[in-house]
Amino acid sequence: MIRALVQMDRILLALDVYSERHKLVLLNLRKHDSEIALFLVKTLLFQHQKSSGNNSPDSIDFKECATRILDETAHGLDLSHDWFMKCALAFVKAGEIEDCAKCIGRAQESIEKLKSENKDGESFVGIYNEVIRHLGKIGALNVVFDVLDVMNLANIQKDNETWEFLANAAVRRVEFVKGVVSMDTMPDQELPEAMFIGRSNVGKSSLVNMTVGRKALAHTSKRPGKTQQFNYFVVNGKKDAIEYKDKSVVKEQKKMSKRAMEKLRKNPNARGNLGRSERKEIKEDLKAFYLVDCPGVGYAKVPKEMQESWTRFIRDFLSKSSRLRVVFHLIDGRHGPMDDDRLLLEMVSDLKSKELMSSVQFVIVLTKVDKLDKSKVKSGVMQQTVQALKTVGLLESTPIISTSSQSKIGRDEMWRYLRSVTIDEA
Image 1 (cartoon, helix red, strand yellow):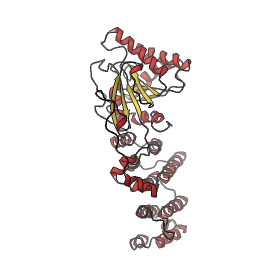
Image 2: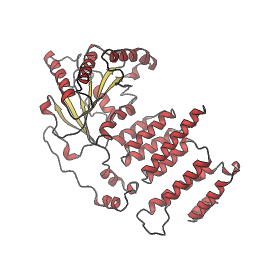
Image 3: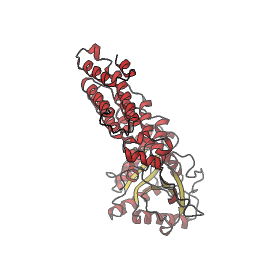
Image 4: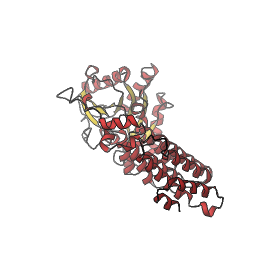
C-alpha cells in the first residue's frame, strides 16, 4: 500500500500509513519496515532534490520527512550498519553531507553494539565504495575518512575500487612543479609540505605515485640514485599556481561557473544537484599542498660530495622549512632499518630535541610488504624498527605503517597523516 501511495504521489498519506504501521508492536508486521523505510527515505530525498529552491510556505520539507522516517525506524528496530550506509548514500546523493555523516556515525554505533554482543554482521564493500565515490564528487574528504573508520571497525576488506575512490576524493589534480637543489630554489608559493625521505631504492617515487593514484607522476627506476633533486609536486593546486621548467606561470584559471555559483547562492545545500562540470569547478574544499620526493641516501652510485650535500639539504629542510607538516621516512619492509636509516632517525631526533620540528608529524613507512609474509613483518622488521626508534627516543611519538605500492596496502593510512595538509590546514 505504501509503495502504491507513493506512485500515486500521495506522499504525505504514505508517511502517515508508515508511521501508524511502525507503532504496532507485532514483529511480523514490522520485520519488513527497514526495507520500506529505505524506500521512503530515497523517495523523499529525490523529491527534496526536485523541489530545491522552492521556498513556497506550502511546500513539503521532504528532507525533514526523510530524517523523521530514519529516526522512527532506527528507534524501533535493531538495524544493521549496512542499512545506515545505504541511507548515507541516499543523503549524499541529495547533497546533504551533514545527514550523511550522521548516518555513518549510526553505522559505527551499530557495529560497536554487535561487537559488544560478540556478534557479526553481514557487510558488502560495494555500498561503502559508493558512499566514498559520491562524497569524493562533492569534495567531502573528511566524511570519507569517517566511512573508512566504519570499514575498519567492521573488518570490511577494502578492494581496488576503495583505493581508487579514495584517491579520487583526495586528489583533484596533481602536477610536477620543479626540481629543487637548495633552500634558495624552493617554490615561491606558500603551501604546506609533505616530505618523503629514506634510503635509495626504498620505493619513494612508487609510494608517491600510489598515494596520489597516478601511475607515472614520479619517475621510478630499478637503478638506485635515479632521483637526484628534491622533486616538488603540487596537489590540488590551481592551474595558475603551477610552475614549470620553462615558465613560472601558466594560463589564468577560469572563473567558477556562474550558473553553479547562482545555484549555490540560492540554496547552499544544493551541491548534490550540480552538474558534473559544475561540481568539478566548485570542489575547493581540498587544500593545495606540496609532495616533496627527496633523493635517496646511502646506496645510490653518485659522488660522495653529492650524497653529503643531499644530507645537508635534508637537515636544512627539516629544520628551516616553516611549511613542512609531515615527514614520511620510508624503510624497506624486507630488511628493516639500515645504517643510513639510523642516521636519518638520529637527525630527526636531534632536531626534535631542539624543538626545530615541534609542529611536524614524523611517520615511519615500511615499504614493499607485499613481498614478505605479514607475520615476518610483524615479528622481524617491526621489532627492529621499534628498537631503532626507541634508541633515539622517538618511539612514543612516531607511528609505523605498512605499505605496498603494488597491492595498495596502506594508502588509506597515508592519507590519514596527510589530513594535516588537506583538511586540518587553516
